[in-house]
Amino acid sequence: MNLSVVVLIVVFTLIAVRKIGHVHISIWQAMTAGAVTVVASGEIRWFDAIAAIDFDVMLFLLGMFIIGQALAASSPPILF
Image 1 (cartoon, helix red, strand yellow):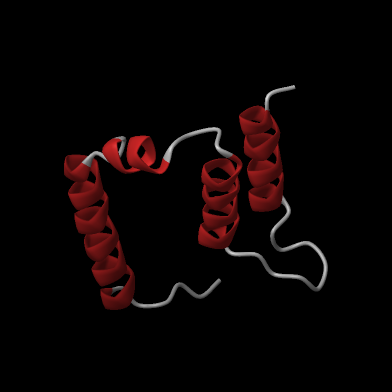
Image 2: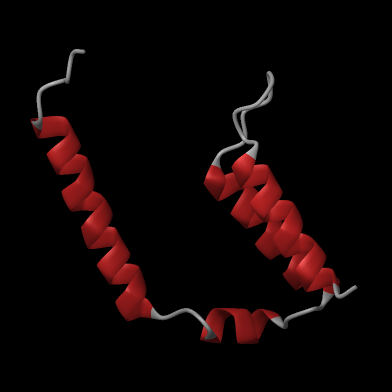
């Protein structure tokens, strides 16, 4: 099996079970570990990984995260 597919499955598994048990793994930690593993193993070259970044999407996501955090901070807590 291709190493990239194995890394993808491991990253998805870590994201799915990140809060089970006493170990807490953030989504960004799982994704960063997967990216470093794929680049360090030579599955993708460093230059190709940098070239694959779409800065329009990155700016869009940054804006969405800022708006989402502002909305979460401005709304009162919901009590059930």
